[in-house]
Length: 161
Image: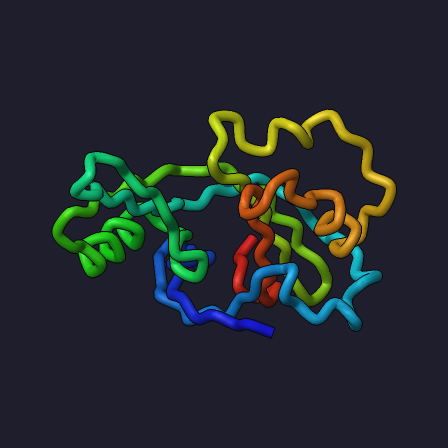
Protein backbone atom coordinates (compact mmCIF):
# COMPACT_ATOMS: atom_id res chain seq x y z
CA UNK A 1 0.00 0.00 0.00
CA UNK A 2 1.41 3.38 -0.93
CA UNK A 3 1.10 6.04 1.73
CA UNK A 4 2.06 9.62 1.22
CA UNK A 5 2.78 12.50 3.54
CA UNK A 6 1.68 16.02 2.82
CA UNK A 7 0.88 19.14 4.80
CA UNK A 8 -2.60 20.59 4.98
CA UNK A 9 -3.94 23.67 6.72
CA UNK A 10 -6.97 22.84 8.84
CA UNK A 11 -9.22 25.33 10.59
CA UNK A 12 -9.55 24.90 14.34
CA UNK A 13 -12.71 25.73 16.27
CA UNK A 14 -11.22 29.17 16.98
CA UNK A 15 -11.05 29.76 13.18
CA UNK A 16 -7.24 29.80 13.25
CA UNK A 17 -5.13 27.81 10.85
CA UNK A 18 -2.59 25.28 12.00
CA UNK A 19 -0.22 23.10 10.04
CA UNK A 20 -0.87 19.41 10.42
CA UNK A 21 1.00 16.41 9.06
CA UNK A 22 -1.34 14.01 7.35
CA UNK A 23 -0.88 10.54 5.90
CA UNK A 24 -3.16 9.54 3.03
CA UNK A 25 -3.50 6.86 0.35
CA UNK A 26 -5.06 6.56 -3.04
CA UNK A 27 -8.25 4.58 -2.47
CA UNK A 28 -7.41 1.92 -5.05
CA UNK A 29 -4.21 1.17 -3.07
CA UNK A 30 -6.01 1.09 0.29
CA UNK A 31 -6.56 -2.09 2.33
CA UNK A 32 -10.37 -2.06 2.54
CA UNK A 33 -10.64 -5.31 4.54
CA UNK A 34 -11.77 -3.69 7.83
CA UNK A 35 -13.69 -0.80 6.30
CA UNK A 36 -16.07 -2.28 3.69
CA UNK A 37 -19.12 -1.75 5.95
CA UNK A 38 -18.13 1.62 7.39
CA UNK A 39 -21.11 3.95 7.43
CA UNK A 40 -21.02 7.58 6.37
CA UNK A 41 -21.45 10.04 9.24
CA UNK A 42 -21.44 13.15 7.06
CA UNK A 43 -20.93 14.16 3.44
CA UNK A 44 -20.18 17.63 2.12
CA UNK A 45 -18.62 19.55 -0.75
CA UNK A 46 -15.03 20.71 -0.48
CA UNK A 47 -12.30 21.91 -2.80
CA UNK A 48 -8.76 21.06 -3.73
CA UNK A 49 -6.13 22.73 -5.89
CA UNK A 50 -4.75 20.63 -8.73
CA UNK A 51 -1.33 21.35 -10.29
CA UNK A 52 -0.35 20.25 -13.78
CA UNK A 53 3.03 20.81 -15.43
CA UNK A 54 3.38 21.52 -19.15
CA UNK A 55 6.74 21.37 -20.93
CA UNK A 56 7.51 22.83 -24.31
CA UNK A 57 9.53 20.50 -26.47
CA UNK A 58 12.11 21.93 -28.93
CA UNK A 59 10.09 20.47 -31.83
CA UNK A 60 7.22 22.84 -30.92
CA UNK A 61 4.82 20.55 -29.14
CA UNK A 62 3.73 20.48 -25.53
CA UNK A 63 3.64 17.63 -23.04
CA UNK A 64 1.30 17.92 -20.05
CA UNK A 65 1.82 15.72 -17.02
CA UNK A 66 1.15 15.59 -13.33
CA UNK A 67 2.92 13.96 -10.43
CA UNK A 68 0.17 11.83 -8.92
CA UNK A 69 1.63 11.95 -5.41
CA UNK A 70 1.93 15.74 -5.24
CA UNK A 71 -0.63 17.11 -7.69
CA UNK A 72 -3.19 18.14 -5.06
CA UNK A 73 -3.07 20.80 -2.35
CA UNK A 74 -5.56 21.94 0.26
CA UNK A 75 -4.78 25.66 -0.15
CA UNK A 76 -3.92 27.84 -3.12
CA UNK A 77 -0.82 29.14 -1.34
CA UNK A 78 0.43 25.58 -0.75
CA UNK A 79 -0.06 24.84 -4.48
CA UNK A 80 1.85 28.01 -5.43
CA UNK A 81 4.69 27.15 -3.05
CA UNK A 82 5.03 23.66 -4.51
CA UNK A 83 5.08 25.08 -8.05
CA UNK A 84 7.84 27.52 -7.09
CA UNK A 85 9.88 24.68 -5.56
CA UNK A 86 9.46 22.63 -8.77
CA UNK A 87 10.12 25.37 -11.31
CA UNK A 88 12.42 24.35 -14.19
CA UNK A 89 13.41 25.97 -17.47
CA UNK A 90 10.95 25.17 -20.26
CA UNK A 91 8.05 24.28 -17.97
CA UNK A 92 4.96 26.16 -16.94
CA UNK A 93 2.31 25.19 -14.42
CA UNK A 94 -1.44 25.44 -14.24
CA UNK A 95 -3.29 25.45 -10.90
CA UNK A 96 -7.01 24.67 -11.02
CA UNK A 97 -9.47 24.82 -8.13
CA UNK A 98 -11.62 21.67 -8.23
CA UNK A 99 -14.74 20.69 -6.31
CA UNK A 100 -14.50 17.60 -4.13
CA UNK A 101 -16.98 15.33 -2.44
CA UNK A 102 -15.92 14.53 1.12
CA UNK A 103 -17.49 11.49 2.80
CA UNK A 104 -16.59 11.13 6.48
CA UNK A 105 -17.02 7.73 8.06
CA UNK A 106 -16.57 6.41 11.58
CA UNK A 107 -12.77 6.03 11.17
CA UNK A 108 -11.80 7.10 7.64
CA UNK A 109 -12.61 9.84 5.13
CA UNK A 110 -13.00 9.45 1.36
CA UNK A 111 -12.25 12.49 -0.82
CA UNK A 112 -13.30 12.40 -4.49
CA UNK A 113 -12.48 14.79 -7.33
CA UNK A 114 -12.28 14.60 -11.12
CA UNK A 115 -9.53 16.04 -13.32
CA UNK A 116 -9.13 16.70 -17.06
CA UNK A 117 -12.72 17.80 -17.62
CA UNK A 118 -14.55 21.12 -17.81
CA UNK A 119 -17.45 19.73 -15.73
CA UNK A 120 -15.98 17.79 -12.77
CA UNK A 121 -18.15 14.96 -11.39
CA UNK A 122 -21.05 15.89 -13.71
CA UNK A 123 -21.48 12.28 -14.88
CA UNK A 124 -22.30 11.26 -11.30
CA UNK A 125 -24.85 13.96 -10.39
CA UNK A 126 -28.07 12.08 -11.18
CA UNK A 127 -26.86 8.55 -10.53
CA UNK A 128 -28.44 6.15 -8.04
CA UNK A 129 -26.41 4.69 -5.18
CA UNK A 130 -27.08 1.11 -4.19
CA UNK A 131 -24.51 1.00 -1.37
CA UNK A 132 -24.12 4.09 0.85
CA UNK A 133 -21.13 2.87 2.85
CA UNK A 134 -17.73 4.54 2.36
CA UNK A 135 -16.68 1.51 0.28
CA UNK A 136 -19.90 1.70 -1.76
CA UNK A 137 -19.26 5.36 -2.56
CA UNK A 138 -15.66 4.51 -3.52
CA UNK A 139 -16.91 1.83 -5.95
CA UNK A 140 -19.64 4.12 -7.33
CA UNK A 141 -17.05 6.74 -8.34
CA UNK A 142 -15.01 4.32 -10.45
CA UNK A 143 -13.15 6.33 -13.11
CA UNK A 144 -14.49 6.18 -16.67
CA UNK A 145 -10.94 6.55 -17.97
CA UNK A 146 -7.55 6.17 -16.27
CA UNK A 147 -6.60 8.97 -13.87
CA UNK A 148 -9.83 10.89 -14.35
CA UNK A 149 -11.54 10.42 -10.98
CA UNK A 150 -9.16 10.69 -8.05
CA UNK A 151 -10.21 8.96 -4.81
CA UNK A 152 -8.15 9.58 -1.67
CA UNK A 153 -8.48 7.96 1.76
CA UNK A 154 -7.27 9.58 4.97
CA UNK A 155 -7.90 9.27 8.68
CA UNK A 156 -11.17 10.81 9.87
CA UNK A 157 -9.27 13.14 12.21
CA UNK A 158 -7.47 14.70 9.23
CA UNK A 159 -10.65 16.47 8.17
CA UNK A 160 -12.15 18.93 10.61
CA UNK A 161 -15.91 19.34 10.23
